[in-house]
Image (cartoon, rainbow, N blue to C red; front, side, top):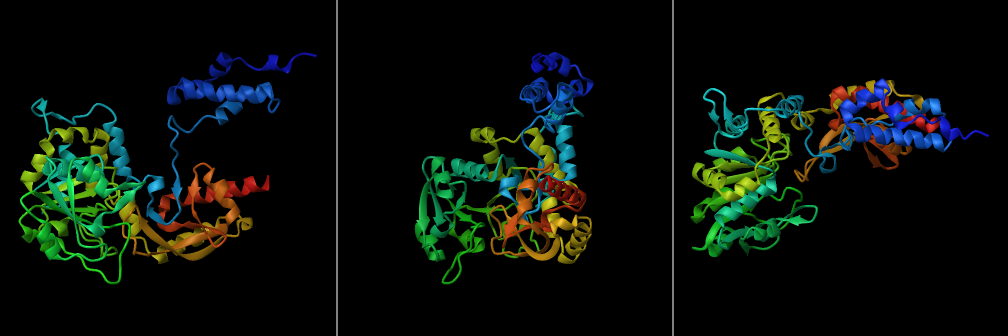
Length: 434
């Protein structure tokens, strides 16, 4: 009896097929060859016929040369850390594509001489916060605070901070440990729930580098509490550094308790640090805004080189600041009435066996920001059993489970993703029937 494995096409023959040759140009040889080998193995195992190897190899090809996959965020969490925090605007994505090639990132094309790195992004940031004497950008929010501390508290000088602001910022990383890792000595004042101006005044001395005001953005303390404002701290005779965390540049009507860079600078802060990939809605980056002399001192420090952002980040940040409304602010602006209309349209297009239902929902800001803010929303409720197939689909759809139902919250789904959502649910339902 002839060995059926003899009929399996050779790897070079399969790779010569036009669809796979085109895939090599797009994905590279290794990923395409892996798909071919997997299809050949299925043939050896008797799962497919030799004539089907090419088609199965094509079906096994990844969507791109990265293992990262585009995901539809239907969780209702606007800035979802596990999903990459702020999704970029179309303008920012196009800017990254432009910056991927040779660019004038450090070249003045008019003179042919070296230019200021990232000048477009820096000018755009400065224009958004005119109260800042100067601005600088590093690779994330923690880096911004680390740079300030390393430069201003060099030599083991002290940083005065309230005990209630010694926060953990995620994944086990904590503000006090970050500050100490770059050479600062902490001077804690007050108690967990109450601190007074007199506590700061007693702690400040000739060895104080600055007073640090940290916004506890990922938790709230209520009840018998007291804190000291930035404006009050400015009278202590030392620089005041405010870490606002979220990257909000100006007041937002739906986030009245979230500090913003403009207001904090107007209150007298010498420096403000923040993240660019949260409420600003841009790429991962750390923002430094404040007194021009201090910002220049930070920018010129050797440690700043280790925290430098690349051209892709600079391009995305500039487009975020100058382009159309990014997805995060757009999500915060969505209203339940509009979401309800979208939800009804989506439900009408779904198979009856998915039991779709339009329900009221509540979204959150996420990303360690505005923990006390509830965002009224609308979701589509489906059977819980569809959660797995939707996560494994293309594109994956991630919702949230609540009371035995899967909720697809439209607060975090852009209108242009509605058709993808419908197609994904249909495919998930078809998989269940098989």
